Each structure stands twice: as structure tokens, then as C-alpha cells.
Image (cartoon, rainbow, N blue to C red):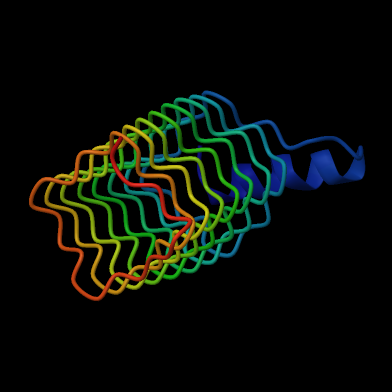
Length: 185
């Protein structure tokens, strides 16, 4: 499947006022930059090394989706459901993931520098070695998340829940937190 096929599926769905359904599609290494896929069903889709820069995936379903090594710089992933998604080594610099559900997702080695993850659910997520510098994690749920060797320098952790999170060797230099931030219990 290529960009033209995806564009045709989107067009047909819009004409029929239906939700775009790309579940289980093989879209590895496809350039989907700037595509509008709000509310789309991308469950179990393979987007390995895909270019999704500036994509609009607001409220999309991406459960068990493979986004490893994908580029999603500046993308809108607010309120997206990415439970158990694989985002290993993906680039999400400056992306908006506000209110997203990334519970139990693999985000190891991901670049989320400057990303907005306010109110996101990252409980039990693997963020080992990830770059979260200057990221907005206010009100985020990081309960039981693995943040081993993660770069959280300058990150906003105000009101974040970090109970039982694994913070070994994490860089918290200049991280912002307040009385609402919940640390290990």
C-alpha cells in the first residue's frame, strides 16, 4: 500500500461520512506527512519508518500499532489511543500527545523533546533511554513507567503521577515539579 492508496481510502471515507479504517495495513516506510486521519482506526497497522511529520491523528485508535523508527515530528496525536503500541526509536519532537493513552506502550529510545504530553496516560510504559527534555508532562500518569536513563531535563512534571516509576539514572536536571507531583510510594 502506498500514499495514493491511503489518499483514496481517506477520500472514500470522507465521501461516505465514515471513519477511515486502515487497521492491519502495511504502511512501512510510506510518506504520510501532513495527512489528516482524525479518529482513524489504525489498530495493528505497520508504520515502521513511516514519515508522519505534521500528521493529524487526533483521537485515532492505534492499539498494537508498530511505529518503530517512524518520524512524527510536530504531529497532532492528542487523545490518541496507543495502548501496547511500539514506538521504539521514533522521533516525536514537538508533537502533541495531550490526553493520549500510551499505557504499556514501548517508547524506548524515543525522542519526545519539546512534546506536549499533558494529561497523557503513560502508566507501565517503557521510556528507557528516551529523550523527554523540555517535554510537558504536567498531570501525566507515569505510574510504574520505566524511565531508566531517560532525559527529563527541563521537563514539566507539575502534577504528574510517578508512583512506582523506575527513575534509575534518569536526568531530572532543571525538571519542574510542584506539591501535586506524586513521587514513589
